[in-house]
Length: 605
View 1 (spheres, rainbow, N blue to C red):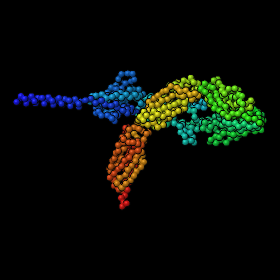
View 2: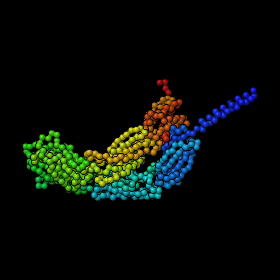
View 3: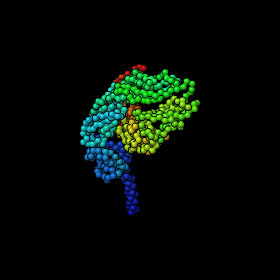
View 4: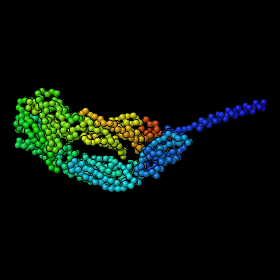
């Protein structure tokens, strides 16, 4: 009997040992941590990151490897907190940071972060000088500057060039990576203040002091006037002339002059207004069916402009004239095309084509077809093309097209560089063509922005080599696609270039009180947040009532990230409460908004 009992006890003990061994194996199962997120390299040379909000493992430490692209690990160490001091690395050197979370000796998923060591927070950002020179031919301004101290280099330095115009509220801010700028939009006869400020775009962004220089743009002559419309009569004609707009040349216009040699000379004293109106002229006492050659010019405070030369023929006393031709255009192969008016009743026999521009250059042709080869003209030079239908020596109404000779179909539209700058909530893209042999007069750029978080796509067409991106949200990854498009007919598109962009996050701005509903023992408040301008994940709204209450509301499941509601209860009637309200997101706490709210008095009603 004793032997049977002993055997039974041994069997039970074995079963228990097996059970506990299985339980221990379940508890010791490995936990692979998620990749870290929101990696930031600050101007204080602190590399920091955050544990994923969906993390279920217990993170015991982090393994950090630092190396250059294409190299093996150069530095490796472990840290217990989600940050590491990397001040031992050389400023402006580019590194790869590999961060691995460790959970009880089990490696988690890796995160690679590529960045240059930014300039330190105490780097000297003062500007040493600003030089301004003017091109006497194009009237462009060339502005150069440099840092007073380039001890640390310039890898994270951007420059904000501010151009302020005297007696105007308009301020132009341009963000540059280079230390020079060619300015083409300034007007003669205007005083400007040109300022340059260096910005360290590390985190947080640090701005240097502003250095400014005054510049007065000297007077310049007007461009030659342009004939806009002409109405023909038998013994007269009415003409409308357009002058160079005031925003491009603010020197006061004083006189307009048209000379028809021995037949007429007309001078008009011009009263210059802010909108710089057209000049309307009626020239009479002319002979029927006669061609008149004339030149027109305009005088401002810098002198007389270059002449514009035109020819106009009066009508015969009893005949119809051809209507103005329609749809005048230049193809990308430099062919000028036009069409007859759909209701043309005259027997059009040929066309007069006058090409003027480039100073005193001009060409005159008589053609039978509705096209003209202009391949002899220089690409991107601007010309006036005047096309007139003729019916058996009766000259019709002229049609004028003022435009550039467009880029040819085989122009290289490859984009060689594509980058961005971001400062004070503004993101600006810049790019450059790899080949600008012909110029860029008929070029536009199609820019596509994809919000990879929401899946939305936005297309826009821009001119020039820069574009400002509005409504760029923080903590969101965007894919930017860019291609050059020759807008001549037919249009041609260049190859696509792309870039992925994510603006680093920051705490929310201080919340704004939108609505408060007072009760005797409570009040309900609605607070306005940044919304889509800052999509760094929201966490908490805190209402600090001092010694009376502290109330927090979770913001992680908000349907509308623009507003947050909070209700404070168990208050005393007729009492003023002073509150400080702040909001927390994944980047930290905002500044607090102070507000005073009084509960209502109790009353029988």
